[in-house]
Length: 269
Image (cartoon, rainbow, N blue to C red):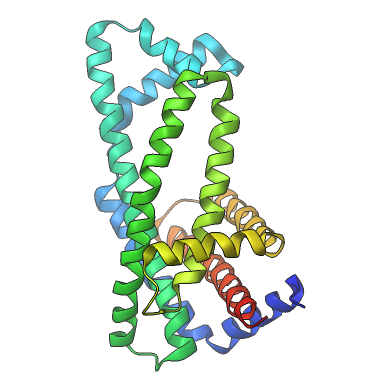
């Protein structure tokens, strides 16, 4: 009988026995992430019109600030101001979205590759790269598959604005849990299983083991929020940011190790 405590103990042993390569990997990813953010994140000039819009909405609506309030503020702007704002918002969202996807793809691919390589192969750069390319392809397909769903959600939210917040929260929770279950499934290569088969296995795994999956996701989420809060209290320099990013990545390693261990043992039941 699988239990949360036994899985957590197995995860702790795995990380303890392979601490050095894990630390080197998370530090490397954290540094690369910070470099990507430093060079490609939108500049202050890009977000200035957005900041001004939020300030205007806050002055008018105060504690009632919401997506609807922002929409009303935009409609109240002159045509010239709207023409200046919309490209700025779209440019900001596209850039931030691309950076987030690239960083997520990089970190997840490398972490999953590390877990598999340590578990089944000799740890080497060539083995890591082979596994990264295999895993990254499936992650990209999963991200692309999610796009129509979020477009559909946007249409529903635009038609029924009062349900916007609960629907968005539910959609994000489902996406995150389905995503991490899928990540656990694609660590191990099974030649006869393509992307669709892996996706079905991931959803079945999520359905069957939701009781053991949700606690680790909750711990990851709350611990990440705590680290972000602590980082916000400190002077933000590159070294501090890299350290906190590495700690959050270590939490991700723990979460994915736990899920993969759960998935592997589930197959043997």
